[in-house]
Image 1 (tube, helix red, strand yellow):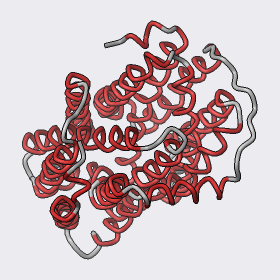
Image 2 (spheres, rainbow, N blue to C red):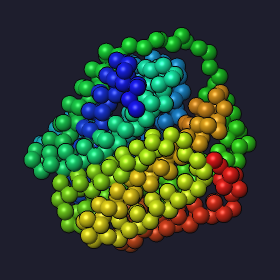
Image 3 (cartoon, rainbow, N blue to C red):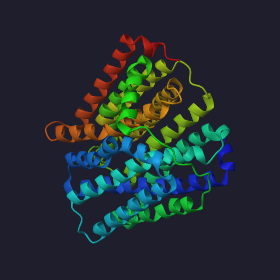
Amino acid sequence: MVSALRHPSFRLFWAGNFLSNIGTWMQNVAQGWLVLTLTNSAFWLGVVGFAGAIPFLIFTIFGGVVADRVNQRRMLLVTQTAMMFLAFVLATLTWLKLITVWEVVVLSFLNGMANAINTPAYQVLVPRLVPRKDLTNAIALNSAQFNLSRILGPTLGGYSMAIFGMAGNFFLNGFSFLAVLFALMRIRYPEQQPRRHASFFLSLRQGFGYLRGNPQMLVLIWMTAVFSFLAVPFLYFIPFFARMQLHTGESGLGWLLAASGLGAVCGSVTVAALGTLRHRGRVIIIAGLFFFSAISGFSLSHVFVLSQCLLLVEGYSAILMISSFNVALQHLASDEMRGRIMSIYATCFLGLPPIGALIVGEASRHIDTGHVLAFMAATAATIFLGFYVFSSPLRQLD
């Protein structure tokens, strides 16, 4: 189950990213709490969420093209250093009590831009750190460390914020980047020879044409778009529900986010134990319905323990659904088109939630935030059922 960790470079890279991701989740907890402290508004939570994630819609595909043409280690060193600098700026402004919500928005956008460029380079580098026979295990271990950081980061972040304040979390996140920067300086892998590439726009057009010609992949991309646009934005508003609806503090917020992370870890273990998911079309629909139901229930819940349980279900079902999307697309795409198909998938998955978050934030100025999110989740569930009823390619997906 941990065969990829036998390779020193991957082991070092894995550990560095694990520590850095814990710091990132600690910052996420404090940033949401900071926005609420400054504005007491769900609208501004939506704006900050939009600013931090919209760069994925704009820059992710471009980042993939750049990652194919430059040294990935150097690219990651630049993006990780930029994110470390932004964390220290946020920490300093918060500590000096000079921070405003507009500064949080700008820093969140800049951090999202660096992360959007960082993500493709990260995905390209990982397969070069292990032999092909250990690649699947390396991908699974990366998923495990990310979801484990979702548990540890918010939990530690809640208590750290209670002890050291919000600025303390931002400083700790800044220092956590030293772990991944150290790993990047020490890893060893074979350098690639420069290659000639087709133009970016020609390659992208070919990718979209290939997608239109495969009904199963096309319906999976559309379902990813629905899931990301209508459901994922709910994650940006968990601090709002913690403070306004569940009347809990920083540590309570940490426990809520940790419950979602624990569910995701359990989902990852389930996928790893099953090895191969059969009847993926049905798995996507069933997991999706549980996911949307958990979101609706959480949005209307006023009981802390019930909210934790619903987030556990949310995290578990989300991983089953996302894994099914990812694995199905990887298998359906040809070798020469896989990169382009996965970049389209990543753009939908990471780029649409900020637009949904902005819409929720605006609607919450006129309608109760919980009702808005519950309605969006119910709409997504209805669309998923419609896909299953009317799309034979989805029902045939195995």
